[in-house]
Image (cartoon, rainbow, N blue to C red; front, top):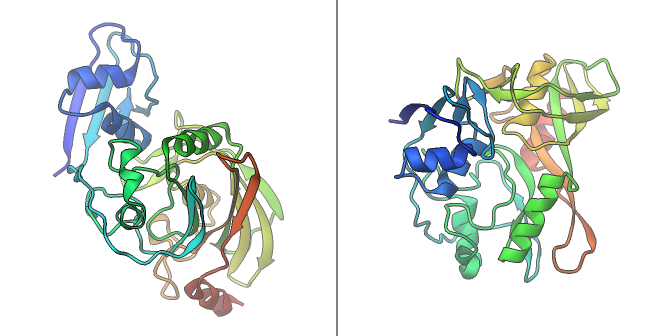
Length: 298
């Protein structure tokens, strides 16, 4: 069962992560950062950042999931490799494959597969997701880039932080969207009534998603989606906030018998190569299940 910690700052503290490392010595700094990034740490009932400064009286609520194994084992899992060199590997991730170990999926993840393909990857850092600089939800397919050394990890992580990496997803939204294009700028945070969901919340993290309609059908709309920030479930939550949840996304109200996962595919990723400085773009076409779903709505 997940553990819950309710802490109160008795004096001003420079940083949230340092406060938690001191108050919860059983947790490593890297694991504390994972919890914060995943929205499992709330300060005065609002999501926080690792560098947030605390004041005396601030209430910190930490939800600690069941512990995932620290010693991640290599596993021979087939990978659809789009590109690879000494610095990075670009993969077309299938739906159903979790990116890194966590509660409920301790192995058989993308990290396990990559460790088998690149045995030296584990030397990058000591946490449970070596080389991972961004994520795709388990049931989201498409392009993901993984760093193969410390230099690449730092460079790619910084590019995501600076928002210089360009991401384009293909998504099928329920209903006929009226606007041809637009930008969604609703702040997002973990839903206090359902911790599995992300919702538009006052005090949530700033989140920006641009979209462009490609084709309208009778009961759905095919769109290009360009997230400018990288929040958990961002596209899924933003489309639900527009009352156009993604087709197949049962968690956000778009469930259908036609598709058993959300219609969301990371179709294109553009970034600057950490070694050469070259601007590179990688693409992945829609997988078969999404092509079939599209035909059903056409």
